[in-house]
Length: 316
Image 1 (cartoon, rainbow, N blue to C red):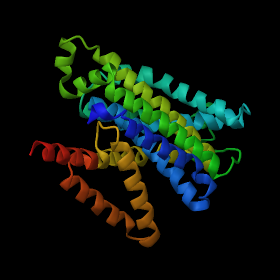
Image 2: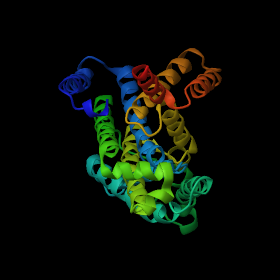
Image 3: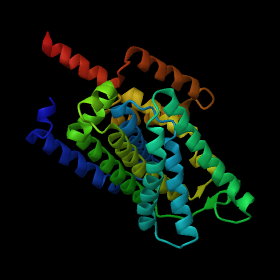
Image 4: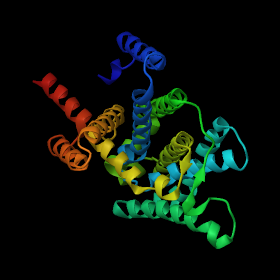
């Protein structure tokens, strides 16, 4: 199955889907277009989390920290340095990745719950820095709890294309990881890290690289979302619920798979919107029930379960 991924049929199907996505804003407007952009964003965020957690097995609870860093970098560059959005977007990714290296090198030496707690502490620390630094240092830089108001951006069409481009880039990197020697190193770390070290894998370098790649894209998604909503606060962009949603989407779709983030991100975003529109007061309860049902009956995620059934059918 994996060897046929670049078959003529799959390539034709890919370009057909790409063409449809590119021309869709000519026919779709308003809420539906915004919804599609939101789906692209969550697929991309889920894929970012999947790069580190799905392939190495290191459960990262601090991913929102890089999302928030990217949000504030763009907000500060656009409001104080009067920089345009696109260069601000690139700087957001670079600075987020720059934070990931010194954070990742020590924390990725930890394993299991210790790594998760360390990354969660990092995200919470970043939120507190942004909340309190202005008051403590007597400056007006981050805006404290009041946040920052960004310039009003273009319409939903612009963010539809930006979110799609970022999502496409993350998925392309995920596909490369899936089929590259680097990806095999990450999978080896997931399966048996000590054994991987014995056969010559530089595990710390591989983990840090994956962690930095994830942070780079998380920062750019945070930057885009900040410009899209035009107003950010520390409690919003460093909210742990953003990471939790990435985790749930990855589990629903299937960890360590290329299609997992696409399926999980799309599924949960669409279901959330449908339930929220029809059951305003009870939609969280219904959503929780649906997530529990999927996880109980599909412990490997939707993609993993379907893949298992296909393999089982071929064997029999």
